Length: 289
Ligand code: GUN
Image (cartoon, rainbow, N blue to C red; front, side, top):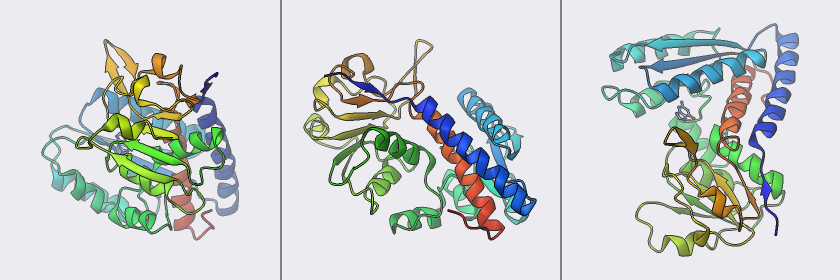
């Protein structure tokens, strides 16, 4: 059996190009350029790269991008004050605070403070709630990217058993919510650090999504032959990027697999751009979908 390597880089480019065309049409109709503001606190090396990539992608799609780079010692009150200003600024359509934040800042307090209409990450409790109720305003960027890659190799996910490794607020939990949406209709199992007999669970997956942040954690013994394997992990080992899946070995048994890099990673930014356009549409009373 030969494995399909799912090309996230090419898929993300198509999605970014499509959004770019929609941005051009939106500007023509409204005279307004969608504007995403990204806030980066501190000097985390990986975050700096992610933020630069978000900025570049925004500009390439014809959107306006502003990045606020704040000192690592910034207080929670100072960050909340900036978010308050951006929330009420009609020139700003989307706001993203890059995570993780320095220790002195409580992450949830910051995510709660972002206007839900500008919350392009879909991390605000109102947007999480809307997704849980099956009427999302914004789709969470990384889970949406995973789903698009799954649908490329499996257009009909109805009744398929998806097993998710990891229950994070950014990936695992919203991924489960997306996969049980009507029209997607997968059966979902979410596994985490307390799950018993993990390999028994993962071996039942038609679709296996690894999002735990442990390098090469998923081995071929944990994967059903022919399964679709989506690797969300980005781990640095000896200076090299590796996923949560032992790619070389799992690729022999999987039906389809995403590489790291070039799999899920580029899809996150592509969906962020889409959300920034949706935010601009919502704030100018244009149809958002
Ligand atoms: N840090 C790692 N992934 C993400 C993400 O999707 N959004 C934000 N805001 N920060 C992150």
